[in-house]
Length: 295
Image (cartoon, rainbow, N blue to C red):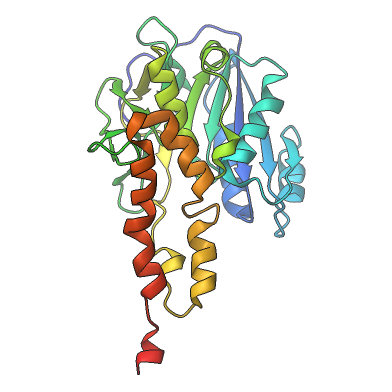
């Protein structure tokens, strides 16, 4: 844990982590272990709700055996990240926790992450969203954080570099984000209709319009590798039909959720931006040729 000032807390405070999992058993277990090992003291009660979206690797059983206090909800297999997180949130809110902690299951938290996030949320005197920046476990480079627009397009974002004190961001990556109950009551739930991506950016932008600040905590609060690699819809070895299914699928650019986000955050320009998504990206998906075929 890097710099963060006084993290003393008065209790009792309840924090409920919400997580989504799918076939990442060992990462999910490591994430939960880092969460329940937090140095929080008796003032803070840690709970967790995990929605497992039809894993085939034994994740639910392993979590139940090692962390019996975690409430594990079985997903249909078609929830993806936003849908699973929205379901976990609904279940978690039944117990009225003081804070919800969005937690990606590939995150490993530093031992004082929760204390720092609570301190950050309270740092301005008004309840705010506290965003935990992530570093690569090998290089230490920043991988996820708060974000701000990097141009006119509402989906083009750049990472906000954490400082020695909380730094305001326009919105955020949802890897480790602390939401006070008062903020959740005001902003509303995670939009599971966005299916897989953009639900985190959407939430921060909705909150911003309501005057709720998203504050990046000092330093980093844990490790998480950056998702990388070439998109599968560019794989020339796949048939065009399969590439198109991947491109339009939940982890690509599904037209409905894309329009839903742009309508909300792009103003009157949203139809043009929606169309440009496909005019710009589809040609290399359709016309890419296999090197074996060219040979």
